[in-house]
Length: 296
Image (cartoon, rainbow, N blue to C red):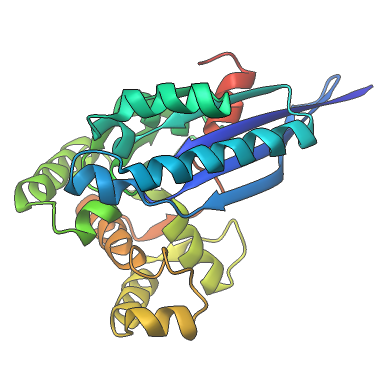
C-alpha cells in the first residue's frame, strides 16, 4: 500500500522567494521518499531593501503580496495538504517585517513565520543528510544565502557545532560586511575543525547549485577547491552582462554568484577542505522534512 502526501514550503529569502511542492511517498516497511513536484522561484530581492534602508519598500510589499497570492493558488491546484512559510535574514532585519507578515496574512491568507539564524540552521540540517554523510568522516556544511550564512559541523553523523553569521551575497554586493565578520568566521571555523584531521565540505544555496550544474558532474561527485577557485576567477573575469548573455545566468544570479563563491572558498581554505559536495537541498527541503517529522 502506497500513500502520497503533498506538502509545500515557502522560503522567503534575501535574494529570492521560493515555493517548493513536494511529494511524500509512504510505503509500509520502506523508508519515506521525498521528491520535488514543483519549484517556483521569484526574484524579489528583499535584502536590497532591508540591509540598505532598513525596511521593505512599498513596491516590494506589493510584489510579495502578488507572489503569495500566486503561491496560494498553486498550492490549491497541487492539492497541498500542509504548508509552512519561513522568512529569513531580510525580513528579520526590516523594521516593518512584522507589519508585512500581518498584511500578507490579511491580503493573501498565507501565514509567515520569521525565523532566526539558529532555527534556519537547524531546519537546513534536518534535510536528512544521512545518505550523504559517511559516519567515519567529518563535514562542514555551509549554506550561503542572501543575508546570512549558516555553518554546521557534522562528525560521526551528528551535528557538533552550528552557527549563523550575518554574511550573505546581497550584503557583500552592497559592501556591508566588514573584515571583523570575516575574522569571526575564520576563527569559528578553525576552532570547530581543529580536532579533526580531514574535513569535507557540503555546500547548499542557489549559487553553488548553479556552479555545480555548470560543471556537468554527477550528483554524488564533489567539486575540488582548485576547480571552484578557477570558476571564481573565470566568472570574475566576465562582466555582469557577459555572465547573463554567454552563460545564460539569471539577472539576479549573475551578480551574487561571485560573492557566494568567495564565502565557499574561504570556508574551504579555513577548514582545510579539499572537496565540496553539492546535494540538491536547502531551506525548502528542510521545511518539508521538518514538518513531516514534526520537528517544527
